[in-house]
Length: 231
Picture 1 (spheres, rainbow, N blue to C red):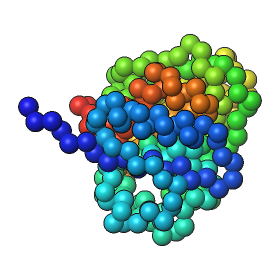
Picture 2: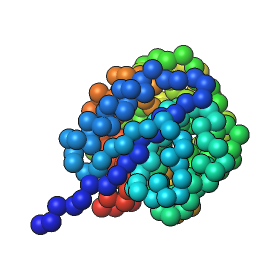
Picture 3: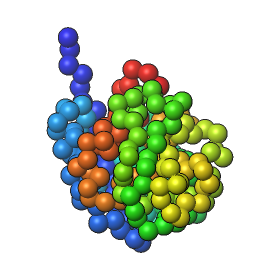
C-alpha cells in the first residue's frame, strides 16, 4: 500500500496587543505532533507578509494560534479568503477568536468573536451529544475538570446556524459565563468552500502537553485537510 505524502501546515501566531505566554508551547506541540504522526509538515511563522495567494497555495491547513488583534492588512486577509474559497482548511485556537476585531468576514470564519472571559478556573467540558461521533470528537469525549479561560463571545455561537458545536462548558461548574445554560466552546463548519475547526480552549502551556487536547488538535487538522473518513 502506498504511503500517503504528508501535507503542509502553516502555524501562524502573530499578535497585535495581548500575547499569550503559551504560544511557544503551542508551536512546539504542533511540531512534535507532526513528527510523531508523519501525516503533515509544520512551518511556523509570525510574518504576515507570507499571506499571499501564491504562498498560501502551498498549504493544506493554516493554524491560527492565538492570533490576537489586527494581524492582517487587507491584501493579506484577501489572500486568506482566497485560500479558504479554494478549499483550504483553517484550525483556530483560543485567542484566534480575538483576531481582526473589526472584520465581519474573519468573525464568520472563526464562527463567533471573543468578547471577554472570567478569571480562569477549573470547569466541566461536555461533549455535544449529537456530534460526539464527528471525526474530530469520536475519540475524545468531554472532560470532568479542565482549567482554562471560558470565553464569552459577542454573540451566542448557537445563533450562527452554520456551526456544528462539538464541546460546551457546563456553566454550573464555573463562574462568569454569559451564554446561559448553553456555553459552546468548540465547533467546526464548512465555510465558503473550506473547512474550519475552532476551539476556545488552550490558554495555558499545560494544554499543549495534554493528550485529550492534543488529540483534538490533531483530528481537527486532519478534518480541515479533508483527511477524515467522514464529516
